[in-house]
Length: 121
Figure (cartoon, one colour):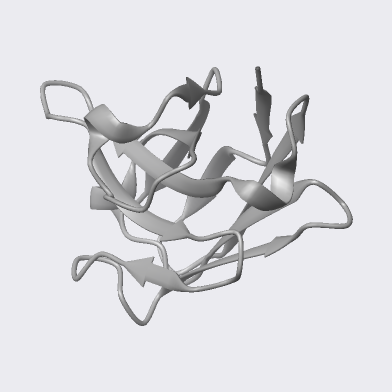
């Protein structure tokens, strides 16, 4: 089993940057693909970025060029660097883990508790 704990959320102004961290424990971290999801009130949860154990990345079109996902297997940590934040980025951001690479909500087996990101205009 894997436990995931996100941190780094907060209240920022439009145009600011934040770096979210997800610390993993249990399991063998390097074998997991990791995803970052977000969910705003009244909206479906969406995948914003993902990274395989070997470092192959995916970034959703809505954030591509602004957000970057990365990981350090030696530190059991995955990050989401968020730049040029916009009010529409406001959401609860969660990290998740899976052994596969299907990039679907249903394929992720382990989830963190989420961290709130609020971007004011």
